Figure (cartoon, rainbow, N blue to C red):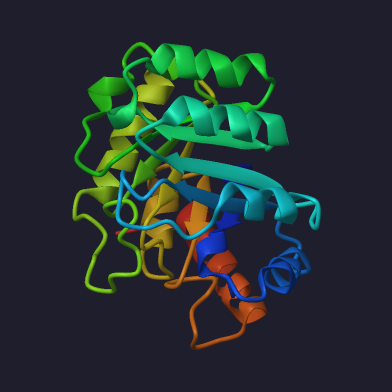
Amino acid sequence: MQNKKVDIAPSVMCADLCNLEAGVKEISDLGIELLHVDILDGHFSPSMPLGIDTIKQLKTRTNMKFDVHIMSKNNEYFIQEMIDLDVHQISFHIETSDHVDRHVQLIKQSGIKTAVALNPATPLTELEYILPLCDTVVLMLINPGFATNKNEKQVPYAVQKVKDLKKMIDEKGLQTQIEVDGRVSFDTIPELVHAGADILVAGSTSLFSSKQSLSENKKEMEEQIKKGLFEEVK
């Protein structure tokens, strides 16, 4: 795994939402290229932190690549809005899509990286036919939209699910990346990376931990990633 690159994707929800432009610049100044942007409609889960107009404005203020995660009952509307913004990657939830293949094709035809997202308890068998069309699969490791609930813990089968997905990808001879989202902490990073995670969505338990500065937290994340890549994880 020595040649593998693991990307850090800071969650914009964890930045200072009152000083969003400055917060994103601080992240960008660390040399991080990917920004994880959650779009929630208030129905899929009880949260709605950023509106589309805010994202449009933010897109003009930074060169970071937007990794957009749609959590909505109306996927097609938000997919089209994000295609119009020419973001880097769009993921939507299989659980709320009646026409998964159509939505995948919409994104692929736009030339944007295509991803599907799965809730913690959604089985990987849902990916059987769609996986070869996906650049990335986003595995939620907590119930989406409940990140502000500090009692919401990463599901106990998180690492096993990453391992199982990695095995499925390898058996099909694919290059699909695995993105993990939800309580990705300093403690859990080595196991998640060792299991096969390629992209780590970083929030309050890692990059935005209040115990250290952003730069110190980034350094610690990188150290934990190296452990997952180069050491045997128990």
